[in-house]
Length: 629
Image (cartoon, rainbow, N blue to C red; front, side, top):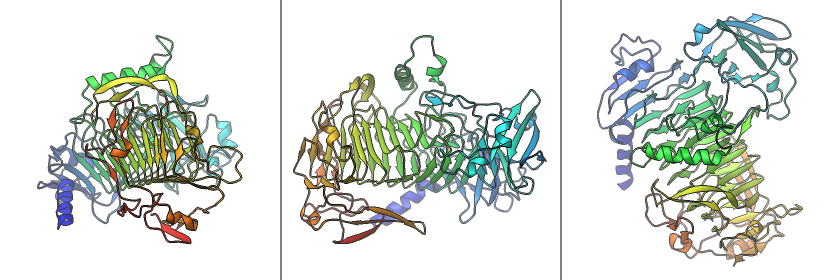
């Protein structure tokens, strides 16, 4: 009965208690009434009429428009809902079809486009820029060229178009020979593209023309739901934490959105942004170069205080739910947010193929990159082939990262930077060569499977903020001394023949602040720290962990040694974890209730009498195969 009541409440929260339903279809007209029998033609037309409690249902087809909501809902129970009609494929694209290409030579085609075609935004005149962006000494336009849904590689000269050379730094060397180049003057934009043996006028050839697909220009457009769409091909700009952050889908300093069940792909920079607006600063470090001081840290601190004066608090900002989305082919982040990700739930998303072209780089690239994810819960996401998996930067306090799966991330799975905690990392599966990097303190790492390096180090040169519990009220600023971490009940696996000592927890041997390390199991060359207590050392045993992907599912294969099942560990509670030293704040749930880790990766209850290390509470003896998605 309880589950039924929760289901009804959830449906009411998503679709509203009552209200009108407006329909949009490719067969419609914007002079219609928006009824099922007389639908609107564009989503933007429906936006003009939708009021709190209403639903906009969009039917099958491709909608090439920027949806700019003009009003939001009033509460969780009185939302404005944008949804794809059930069972229908609905696409929102930031691109236009181009089919008047003229053949040049060597597989290269050329198109001349009047600048009036682009309206007030021409991505082939706009270049990527911003704080912490590295252009690798070349120009990168925000625009993109697509052949049958696959983006081409921009080059800096016509010569590189006519004679393309495979880029071995990418995951798709052959694809990198499909290239484009552009030039613009006051009247026209010219694009050359090497399509090899394809005739672009007979294929689906598109160019991105809009800087976003779903983004309210006004702030305070709260309580929207965006559900079931395929959204792609926007000419997005670099989303620095000191800048207005605009992705394909952007919450723009609002509260209480639900973004669910969408497929979001092919952003020049970012898929979903939950972050900062423009008035509190836009790439302030770049704008100030050489004028006052060349220190990005100070510039971001100034931005934080401006944002606080602008109303950054739980009552007005964040508290979004981002769930069940598939996000891929974005060159900066799948999801990012500077301060706007506070109090959010990020759940069950599949994020992959982020930063795969690697034509540019910068300090803001990851599957998920959040600054100030205060009391955010990042739960059950699958993140792979991203460079960095999750990067939590500054003010990671009250944050929980639980039950996520990471693999094939070639920088690291999780990076936590200059934060003072408390934060909890539990029941995760870390399978990449580097599992955890922490330039922070005040963390609790519990019941994880860790198969790569663990590294930690202090940062005495940067003062970063910490807050009063469960709020954005700043309690102080200080540097990172290092330590104050807790490692309980983890399985830590090394590589037996490795010549370095980065496998295991030896990185904590010289931590300045105290650490608590207990009840961990070390396999295959992983080394305990000098500060471990009551651990199981099986460094000579190889559990042969292997991830196999088959038919859309993932299976983890391993064999634990027979004595594994005799090593019982205690349930970990907030009382055991204590308080993070710098903020003097307890390890609690995001809602302030007491923390007790009594569930495993799958949500199965753990037994206080028969609790096992690692993310799984129920494992068979001998060779095991566990379906993890």
